[in-house]
Amino acid sequence: MSETVWGGDQLDLDAYLERIGYEGERAPTADTLRQLHALHAAAFGFENLEIVLGRPVLLDLKSLQEKMVGRRRGGYCYEQNLLYAAALDRLGFQVSGLGARIRMGETKIRPVTHALLQVRLDGEDWITDVGFGGEALLEPLPLREGVEARQGGWTFGLVREGADGVWVLRSLHEDGWFDLYAFGPEARYPADYGVFNYYISTHPRSPFTGRMVIQRPGPDLRRTLIGTELTLTRPDWSRVVRQIPAEELPAVLETDFGLVLDAQDAAELVALHREQPVA
Image 1 (spheres, rainbow, N blue to C red):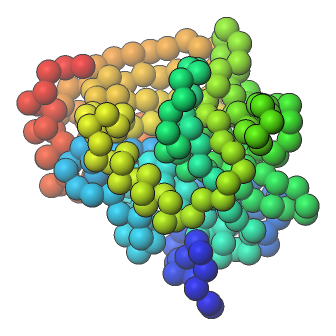
Image 2: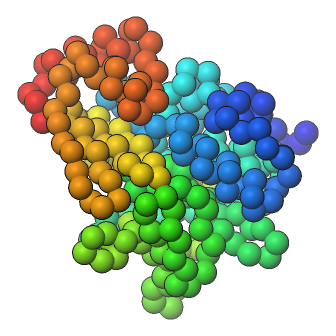
């Protein structure tokens, strides 16, 4: 198999599919895409533990497979979507990368730091993004003006903005539509994500360099652990919030987020949060 932009030729596809629990057809169809997205989102927690533990975030496919498939860890947007893109590429999907500006309900213009993917199927474009964390899509969304989709207990929508090809992904909150991020048509590549990743994983103003951020979206429950504060949010927007003692963090990461830490990482994480004041 010849080398590809997304590295599908380097992927252990069988191991990846076993990790997410996919046993269906391997043809590049809309149904396959939908199942892969849903299963990947359910299998891999969103996490920045490498940064918290003082290690670099590696984006080469060998490292991503070793960490996420072999060690049953997760990752944030670049890690998640690069591994996913390799799988889609290997299965014969027409994949391209995009970059987004995070909004999270604000109009402030932030830099392009989020990675998402676009897939072209039967003449139609879809966005598929398994790396946005707590409010991430649970399935692909057709790239169409005004589209709305119910995914589990959550509703998402896409709108066009202005005349320069900008799209806005929105989530329906209890008080109306909430902008998640805005993205344009410019193609992005693994090399671009490497630059974005360096900033996000090292800059002191990055939301991921100062505290632990762990998230897991689900059809009926969104789990978020920021520092030591665990928040469980249901589709009716009811929330349960509690503080997690440092000693319980490894167990909560495994049971609530599906993240398995080895003994050394678990010990380092507990020690780190014993030294910090409770959030």
